Image (cartoon, rainbow, N blue to C red):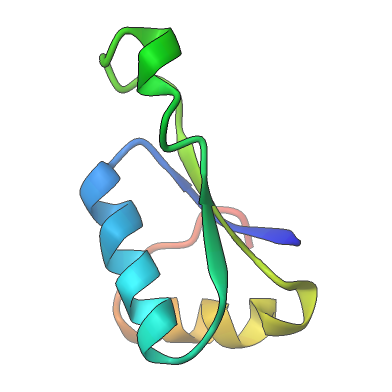
Amino acid sequence: MKELLRTNDPTLVAFVTALLRGEEIDCFPMDVHMSVLEGSIGILPRRIMVRDKDHFRASAVLRDNDVQLDNG
């Protein structure tokens, strides 16, 4: 698995997940339940993980939909 996106925005996590699933790219949102530990203040980023073989295509899907990728 490779990290595709890291964000503090839960709506972006939902949007990216929907985009990837629409393109039949398996993805796994991580750290979505960390609000229990952080007290729901949103300081811990959530991550979207994809298979190594899908990373290039997933990155292209996000770029095509104007989602900013900070990690390359």
